Image 1 (cartoon, rainbow, N blue to C red):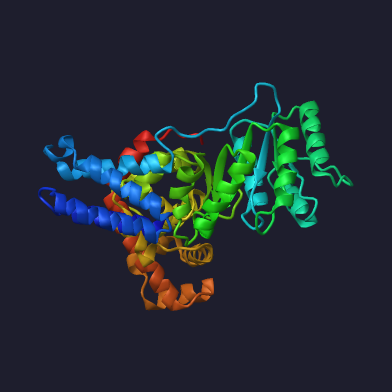
Image 2 (cartoon, helix red, strand yellow; image 1 turned 180 degrees about the vertical axis):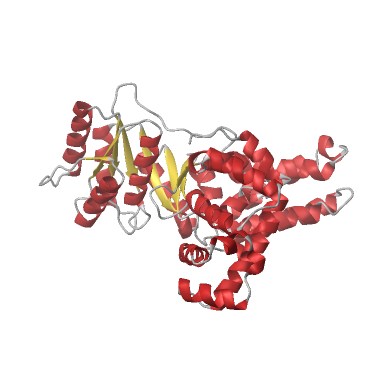
Length: 445
């Protein structure tokens, strides 16, 4: 998430920490680098300049310059201003009507991931003890209606379709009535999109807004479109009065400046971010947590929340003991990779740990889904003794494992190298971050 910007800002901060004291010249150079980093990340030039100016003004204040640790104070100023730029210290939350069902309109351009995001939000709400009903009013694209139906069926979400009714407003009214009579407390309405904003689409959305009186009008915006996402967000807000934004494709290779610009331009908060293609890949947006990730300060709270849902308590206790005794085996390696798959991409997880930014680039930690399947096949092809003691894996044993798993010997060698590097890393973590992480977790089983 915003990896390029994160790497640039972390380097700037490391360079700044190299100074014993911070002079006005040092600050000038640092602010220029920060402004350039923001511009390269596709943040609007005006917002980037204002951000750098605010940081510089605060950093030159008497409280910072006369403190015993001026560099740390400057870093704190950068973090505080970044939190403010992302939306402020207060975490944005969804608004619910006093009388159920609460209606939420999901709007956005075609191709932004609107239909999938509607299903993602429905699943997130259902896991938060709500009973959402999902409905598509995109009568122009039957494939979108079918896509939402399939996603609801696959994830046990409530779904309604007024077959034969081609009026979007009437469809939304029927869905709301059905939701009220059937005990649903939320109705999510997936609206039609276009490749670009046009008057016909906006008039239809205004009719839907006036009829449904939604508590939330959420714009789904593609982070990979950069400043185009910001411009369209402003147009949607000017016409509809948005209440929040959901940024999609934040896991991609985008420069991601939209995340830093949309709040300033629209005045409306980012409420969720999509972090992958799976329906589970939707995270509530916390400005302070993302600021921590960007600056390499970690996001242990989000990591704990993920771990609470995915990690088995007994397994965690046993693994902590093995790490303490340096008894981490290939079998444990396989089991841990299975747990990691539940948490999400490994690079995202490392990005949540403080001061772990440099490790995200290790080739040994770039494991995709296919590689994980291959790793499991290789380890499963070993004997129990081999899984417990990697040192006995000589050339002939590796050839046998290659034949059994259907993978080349070179891949067996690469796996063993990955295992040894991971073992070394986890041993280091067991003495630092991980004990504190485990202590903070409340397992749900």
